[in-house]
Image (cartoon, rainbow, N blue to C red; front, side, top):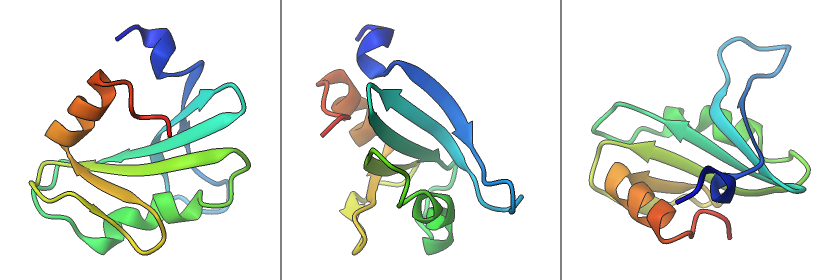
Length: 99
């Protein structure tokens, strides 16, 4: 996969008013955004979603993904994809990160 296929810009996101909420990667491709949070944890925990929930209303946000070292794939009630690293890599290789 060429870097260009991943997006036009890669950034870290944190609101000015909070130092405890952040998103590891905010990808931009044209007007569209994709938020990625990466955790080293083997077990999914709801508190891992705080940053992804905080960016939910960003204009142009098309997808929110939590990547972790566990083995369960799920989608939260508010539309966040929770993927094991292997699912993320397979999706990335297939060009399916952007909906």
